[in-house]
Length: 343
Image (cartoon, rainbow, N blue to C red; front, top):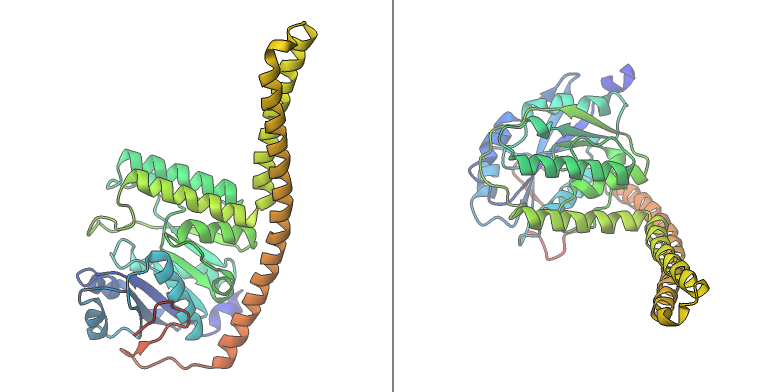
């Protein structure tokens, strides 16, 4: 493992931003430009359609690369655009941090070390949310419940699922495909579990808040959208399990209703419970159909896995053949796949 650390790695820190002209200087000032072992750090700012001076501030502070969305497309899209841009720039390790200066940029060396040592594919900064004084009791409970749920779905140890302070190896970044339009944090962990990627956690101490979260407009809205993301992504990667559970519950409920009807039938009072028999038949038919849908979804899922493998290979070929050199500091680069155009 020691030999791996001696190889010069290209490490790029991506900073998704939306109207972060005030906090971006704090973020950039905290990012180390050199790591132990002689690894150089480059910075890529992903401007998600900002209407303030975010891009001008980034240029004035000498960031290495900038990619821009014409309009605001959301955090998940900004993350994916940054990931693809970093890969095209030849990054061996990609660090994601937020533009609101929530995360301690000085901990980037600790965050990437498990990847440099060959011990992890993804490393997540664990905020230890239960000890964060700024978080309300409700938020702490929701964070704990969310992390527990993601851990069960992903089959991984997940102490802090929503944390966006993360490091990705090149291999992990090539294999991840974000389809959610809301947030990438939960989805990428479930994908990591499904693709057998090694995930490690590093405890961190977050900075004092600089503004209210733009991702969480209301607690109920965040819970609802996060739950929808979890169900959709888990059903995408484990369709047979999801539909088998639903179908089995319906068939089991129908069986219970049938037994109830038989009880009354044997007792000589079956004539008054025909409605139960109709309900049982409907539940059994629907349950059986759901099980069949699960089989079809599983076959589709196998095809999706083949397509993802083909996409992974295509990404590698495109990136290796492109041979794009890193642009000089301050130059605006065009992200490879950005619907709606870029500038």
